[in-house]
Length: 127
Image (cartoon, rainbow, N blue to C red; front, side):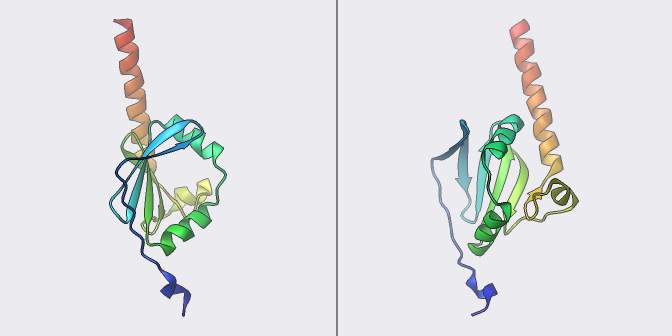
């Protein structure tokens, strides 16, 4: 049996699942073959990344073998993709996170949304 025949499709169904790492609670949802991990802020995502010392390559191999994709989302924007659906490019290689895909547009939009939310909170406090 060749290695390409080892794919074991896996479906993940979640109704109410929360992952907590370094004190950051992250709701997890699924479409069956795609997991969505929702991180509240970019700062929280950085805290989680610093706290978790995992092998991105190993995670990508496991997800690819099981025919799954995981999206890390911040403020509703996808900032990283790992697994079957990942398409790493230049930025991923420069960040050293290949085979994960980093989505700069998603990260910048999440950052902008975070700044906007912080300014909104500040304005409401000052009123």
